[in-house]
Length: 175
Image 1 (cartoon, rainbow, N blue to C red):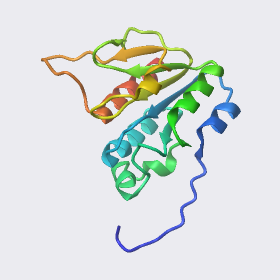
Image 2: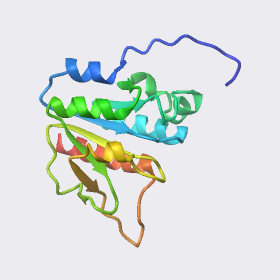
Image 3: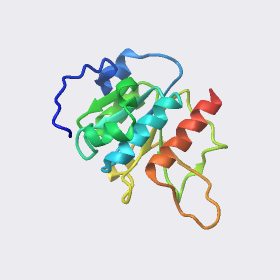
Image 4: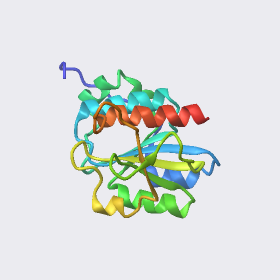
């Protein structure tokens, strides 16, 4: 971006399935992104979720913004403190997670249950979809329960980064 190159070591970046298989903690909450293409949104999600105690952020290589200078800048450098879990696509990770006892929650404005009153499994993955289209049909088929964030004043939805912050905040509040 500014004519400088660096080789950065990120010890908390792991393969998502490998992370799930190795981490058998009873209480583990993750955020998964599918189709989030705006780098600023990905960076802000990483920053908020890390700050609010989410245990890891699953970032597919296909269809999601790459960890580039724009994402790093939007995260205010927090990406280097975050547990980033990489995968090629999200569906195999969610299938493996379900085998390991995770519940998969999808954020949805239309059909979801109120996030503030629903009970979460201790092992949870919260999936946030594309800014316009939501999640793909393949991911939709893997969601156990839809959650929604109550809106006031006729507002239909929040920006995806704001929605991730609400989810992370509610997870932290319950901890």
